[in-house]
Length: 233
Image (cartoon, rainbow, N blue to C red; front, top):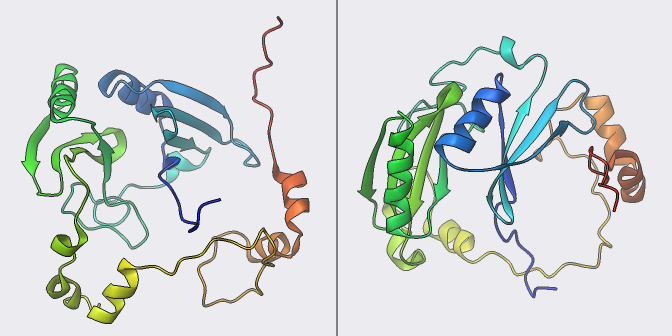
């Protein structure tokens, strides 16, 4: 186990869609990301869940529910519309994919344009160079390449942070999180505290889920078998 427990990357990002086929056409043809899974969403009646592969351990996920098409897209609320646009707190402002080299970034720009999709850039941001374009259903997309890791001493700007009320003491705390190595799974579920973040489930159902032992959740909610049976040898 690592001496410090933290996320080690993005396993997947999930985006809602009302047209799964259009999104899969875009990600497979325009971006070259192969479909690796599509199945009935676990525990969600009528839901369809799909995954396209970006790298061996990194996927982009799409979710289509029966009611999705009835939800109105409103630029400035549900979607930002572009990298400098506004959207509601907690919504995705834009999504940036990774390219491994500058040559790959330019090749991706060629691929996107060859499919008739407009894309501009690269633009040099110092920490990365980026190209910008749109996906179906008003997705705001970017592909970025970096030649070196971000240097915090050069990129944590106390003047910018102070404009939104973040002081130097908080910045120092954010830049050096407390080291934590875990306790072997012994930490119990804390009591429900309305001041903490919570999933927007039915409140009674949510509190019932929180009251269950971890082992019961594992048994009740796990779907370990793929939907397609293994081929006979």
